[in-house]
Image (cartoon, rainbow, N blue to C red; front, top):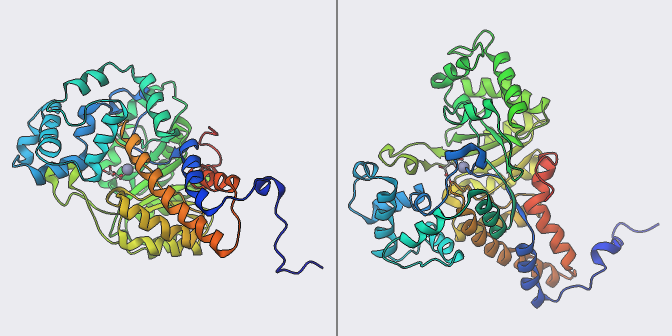
Length: 435
Ligand code: FIX
Ligand code: ZN
């Protein structure tokens, strides 16, 4: 009888290739990362059929809330004065303060440099005339394909709000879907803002009330089911404050338990939880005014344990919560950590988090998402991510070679596909593309 310790026979296909030498690993990993198309599992980009909701071009790139936050640190302009400017004047002010009067060293300013350079546009000119002319000349649908190809993405996952006064009517009227934009049913207004938003559901014909009593729960389930037919989302999602507690005597817990989680189970959809925001600590700077806080992740523990039939795609905003998230993922296989979200999306932190996740979870996690709000941002967010992951994976493969096990390129290909496609496709039942 073959002893347990015997090295398992190596399936011919993966190991048919000759093993890579340690000094061949980095170029093999880099090549595989560059030639493999990823799925961007969380963005704020929009199907071109959703019109002006989709942001692109140099003025939108420069007025990104990450750069607005940095503007107010490097210029005397007040937020009130800034908001009184036109989009173009705002972009000019940010270009002047962060790219002319200062060197673009931050992750967000470097991003602009990467995008301009990628299109062969000047990165140090006094003005933006040439860049504006270039972007204005791009036919959108062709530009989308170009940008996604340059970013190495087969598709992106949107963030769609069924109660947004601008977006909801577009879905209700219907439109021809772009195959590379997947929908997500975003539930912040329902799970975090019921008191202020229940009337929006009532206006769509659902018999709900302020305290979610009476028929509210079954009506909310009907709302979710009908919007899932309309949007065909790959998952439902919500961002939650760092103070999020579950279970709790509040509407968030009630609607999660009685409506959202059962509907996710019925429709076999994962729920994405993005935990750790300190909303609007400085409302004067609007979207840039959110901050973060360390969350008590025992709420996540309770959800994963008490709802084993539900799958939780989870990202946490606090650096201090990352290790806990890995530990919980080792306890619950209905928990999939994803991305280095928002304030964590900085190269030094992405490397730290990714190394820890590989050490604790192998390849059973989703390393990154872009959170792009402007189309061309995927260019720099994925370029920076690929270079970090190349270093981190190279280090891991060289370690296993030093430990005494050979590695082949096919294995690297398999692992990279799992990290940036397979895990998400499995969790979304293959509803995301098979690019
Ligand atoms: O809740 C979210 O999806 C966050 O990503 C955004 O609200 C945030 O403003 C952002 O753009 C982060 O990168
Ligand atoms: Zn986001």
